[in-house]
Image 1 (cartoon, rainbow, N blue to C red):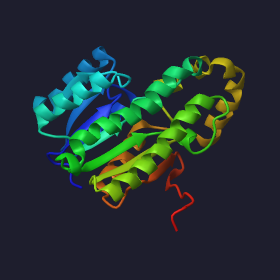
Image 2 (image 1 turned 90 degrees about the vertical axis):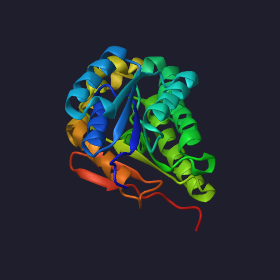
Image 3 (image 1 turned 60 degrees about the vertical axis):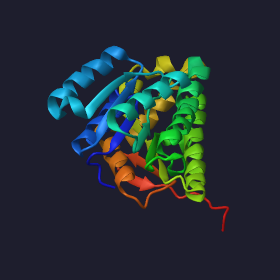
Length: 258
């Protein structure tokens, strides 16, 4: 899948992994709608990218993925501006075990909501061009983080939802590939002041730190490179790509269909 003249939507795009995703998509010829709840950061990034890639290549939309109304409006504005949607990166996420219901709302429900609303524009069954959706999960979606049980639950949910939706798309003829990224610890704001984000599990901060020291920290650019692979490789559907400092690996799951 070549990205020239393709239109991408990235949620949580103003900083961290989302910003890196936005940049790599632009570098490879795509137009990008930058969705983020942080208006100041989003506008600042858009201004910066406009200077480098041209104002016609980016569009900032202030959007909270907890709001169906806001996502609908953002997708509609993207279609009106760029003519359609070919790529969706459901990337927005938080880590704060003290507000566990909000973690579920953003990390899991936001991904489901974004995917379903994107289908209305992307699915070939509803007049769309097809394309690809990449969801951002975590290594926590593949194995438990003891200090972050709800975060673990949401990211596990994202992995399961992605794989089921990929199978549903293939059988139904949506024309959309759906994959999931599962990075280890990434150098973003989520990594800062980690113990304060653990809520009632703050006593396990040392356990988390030991794990960080064991497997290391990767850069947002490493995650963006993996995004590009999942977007451009048309053989990838229902894949979970795990990424650590030592390298990347596609996850093998048990199959119940054979």
